[in-house]
Amino acid sequence: MIITIDAGTTNTRVSLFEGKKRIGIVKAEVGVRNTSIDGNNTLLLSTISQAISQLTLEHNVANEDIEAILAAGMITSNLGLVEVPHLVAPVSLQDFSNNIFSKVFPEISETPIHFVPGLKNLDTNNIKSVEGLDIMRGEEVEALAIAELFDINHDAIIALPGSHSKFISISASQAINGCCTTLAGELNSIITHHTILTSSLQDKFANELCKLSLLAGYDAVEKYGLGHALFTIRLKEQFGGESHQQLASYLVGIILHSDIKALKSAPQLKFTPDTPIYIGGKGVLCEATGELIRSLYPDVKITRCNEVEDLSAIGAMYVARHSGLIH
Image (tube, rainbow, N blue to C red; front, side, top):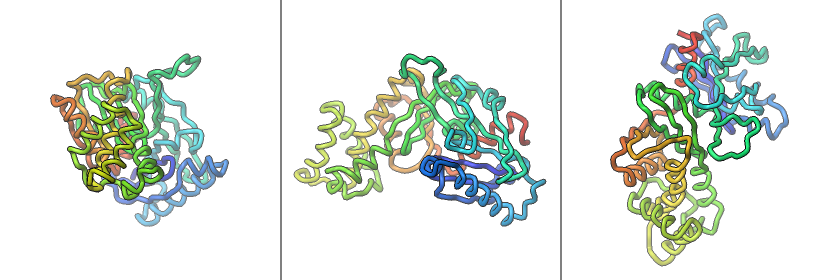
């Protein structure tokens, strides 16, 4: 049996696997944000401890039956259980395997927890500019999971749209060359719920994507810039008679304009119009990212990975198998 821990800013997921099959999961609305608020990680520790106890009791798992406990994500930050230094890109699967950090937490289990490190694009010692710099903790194992699931053996970009979207460059040998982060989902939320546009957008996101409106929003930023493009949402609602689906899709197009610019401009990604792209996730942001890239770069091969619930666990196990920790 293998236990995996995926702890982020606001949520923690602890899963129990038999081989590659998940047989149990416990979710909690506790993350490293609580450590920042409380000034200690006591709540995070107890949440993980309780989750593991619940899983082992429910599935009659003895301590000697646990092959390994694996962890990734913000749990490896200074607000997590233990701070594990970022590795500097490019980082190969072997590099991740060689730098797993292991520690026993008696409050949680007698079995050591094995932490997969995060990644940064540049060595930040004596850094003079943040150009080309980016960081991640957690998305690296999600990217490696997609690389394993789709048997990636060519240079590619892995896109993980979300509150903080990530574009990740991966090589033919599955080494991660670097990443680029945007605030796409967070911007969508702020503009939808907390601006003068909230009433026009009915204080809610699009349930379905209107492709024509998505492209129109992208084009509006090209023509008018971000500020006026956003205000045209109000004009379209008041005088254009457009539906909520059209307006909310238009907003997504406006926001993703900067994502596409980051994709094609960030030096660490080395994107070209024939670089294959794998999109992990489901929902409007993922669909919209694919539609915009397809419209702008018709020759790019786009592959969707919709089953994302266990990506962190799958990636952590991929690294652990490569290191010999698990079989």
